[in-house]
Structures are given as structure tokens and as C-alpha cells.
Length: 420
Image (cartoon, rainbow, N blue to C red; front, side, top):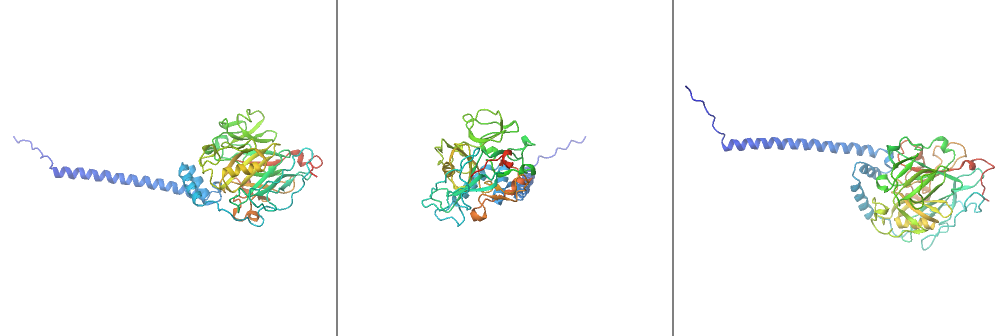
């Protein structure tokens, strides 16, 4: 009988070799999987970034498109950090004088007030030590009523006494002659409310009475507030938030939700953005704090950058301010100088600050080509608004904005108000 053979136990060297072989196998597998994951991530970000850089809805400049892409991909903190570093080392220059046509022209227009219209405001006092001859003077612009009444005036003024080479634009809108509409977008406030009753592009019918259009507020994830339109609360309204409220009859006002406004009765839209920066006819306290979250986490409040704001005067006129080299305190102070008793920041950065006025025969459709940016190449040079007035007539515009149009009675000759 043959005894069974027993295999000898592997030697320590062979055991080490097997362990080394298994370790090499798993290490190579980890490297391959990691490489595949890295290539996938880099490839995904590369493809989406390339798409964003060619998407006009992400802004005009490559920097803005990259920032919008970053925020959409969950990189908002990194984008904000980069913007703060950029603004720190690319701040507004001190001193200097504006260009020759920086303060507009064309005279002050009619100054007497007819029944049914608001009085033209007083000249804006410049904060500069030596105001220019035409600085702060109001000029009528855009379509007049059928009775020949300007419904929008513009003025240009320095933002403060330090950055004196910069000029910001101010628009005054007569809410007795104009009706307001909030247009909503698939990006702001988002697709939840689609289809919206009013969304870009502005239709041919609505363009027949259009006088002005301007940007709304921050992306909703940064706005610290809510959104109501088309009878639906898309994002819950926050008590205490700065709010632009439009009504079904076309009226518009702004203030603090829960104090100045309490009900959605007869309301067409509520658009909230941060907290008020003007209240009781003066800038609110604390605006000079660099990172006070009441007024946004996107960019430090004291940086002098492109910003826009909206205010309401004691008699109900709406005032828009937009331009370069504005800290949030400068924005508030400019609104106050323009007569605002309550005011709020809207949007910021040059790609998203846009105020356009439109001309053309009343009751005839326009396509935006007759529009003019408030700060344009002719009066602002390199500090002109980047977005063109035609943007609101484009299918790709995905952010919310406001239009100001003549009320129906102002489109009919013989029944409209007339300033003399």
C-alpha cells in the first residue's frame, strides 16, 4: 500500500511572493479605476465647461460664463473665493475724471406736470467735490406717450467722492404712465414654474408699448428670499426680505415683506432679494461691513464693482441705479440721492447689470434693435454695459427681468397725459 503524499508547505519566500503578487494586482486595479474615474470627471467638467463658454445665457464674457458654470456644478464657494481675490487686486482706481460725454445730453425736457403724471424729480446732487455741468441732470429718453409725455428720465452721476473717473446711470420711471411686468426664466427662478405666462423672448404684441427693461436679482440660491408669480409660490417668501411687488393692474412698489406688504391679493408677482439697503429715506446701518450676509455672500459688500439697485420714491416713482465702481453703501447712497425712500440691491457683475430703453412708433412691434443701454459705448466707453438690449428678445435668455410699458390709455392720442 502506497502512503499518500503530502505537499510540502510553501516556503516563506513563496508566501511573500504571493502576497506581493496580490498587492501588485490590487494596486494596479486601484490605479486603473482611479485613472478611469479621474478621466471621467475631467472629461465631464471639460465638456460642460466648453458648453458653458459657448452659451450666451451664461453671460457675455468668458469670466462670467465660467463663474455661472462653476455655480451650476456646485463650485459656488470656489467661484466666490476667486471673485474676491480678483476684486481685491483689480479694484476701482482712485481719482481721475470721466470722459467727455459721460453725463448725457439732450436737455432736461418738459418740467411741468400734467394731471395723471408724476412730477419730474430734482437734479441729483453729486458726491464729487467738483460736479460737472451736466452731472445729475435728468434727460428724457425712450418712447413718449401718445400725448408726447416722457415716461422715463435718465441721469448720470459719480458713485462717490473717491472713484471720480467712474459714472453710474440712474433711471427714473413714472409709474402713473407705466405698468410693470416680471418676466421669469428657466434658470431664474427655475423650471419649477414652467411654462411662465411672461418669459423671454418679449413678444411682438408686448413690444408695441415697451419703454424699458432691466435685470432682476441674484440667482435664487443666493437671494435669501422667495418668488411668486402666475398665482404660485415657487419659492417660499421670507418675512423681512426686500421685495419687489407687481400688481395685476400694472402697479409696482418695493419694501419689506411682512411690514410693507402682507397679502398676495391682487398681486401679480413678488421677487425677493436680500434685505433692504435703503429704508426711511436713508442708507441702512451696517452696509460697510465686508461680509454681512444680509446683503449677499457672493462678493464682499465693500468691493467697488458693477452693481444694480432698485428704489421707490415717496410719490411712487421707481428708480433704477446701475454701473461700475459701486460698493453696496455707494449703491444705497445713490438711490437716496435719486429720491428713494426704500431700496434694495438687484444683481451685480458687469454681465448681469443691464438697463435698456426702447424707441419706435407706438403700437408697432419692435425687435429690440431700437434699444439703447443706459451706459453704452457713446457715453461710457470701456465702462459700458455688456449685455445688449436685444437680449430680452432672445430665446436663450433664461434669467428673470422686468419690463416697463406704457399703460393702455397712454397709447391713444387725445386721452393721454401731456406735460407742458
